[in-house]
Image (cartoon, rainbow, N blue to C red):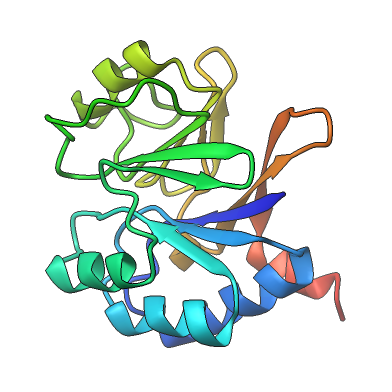
Length: 192
């Protein structure tokens, strides 16, 4: 099972077409939007034309139309546990999920890194308490400009798609979760 994780689409139709192409090329089952998607049209296009499952959370540049578009396709992960194959994914966006009681999540995705659970810079305390309670196998965050991984805390950030980065999260046959940051330009160059 393969998930592509992206942050910072900023409504770019060009980037979403590249994302769709790479999702097909990499054999991704789903795309996880880590915030700052901006455009509900992009979400609908990814879901229908690209034929991948789209899940996501809200970032600081997203408004209610993004949440509505994600909810319409069953992909709004904000304060919700979404099952994708054998993985349980919980999204913690900007709403902080004060009333969400979830016992277990394999992967927690957040638009902002935590104060303690980060690999680039500390941003918000919203994430930390949920991570301490849930003890997920992996935390994937947006906002980091360049890809990074903190092995002590199992925190991964794919970097900004606008700067040419995306993340690949794979569940192996043995159940191990692996992460990889990809440079979009290098990945496309391998195809030529």
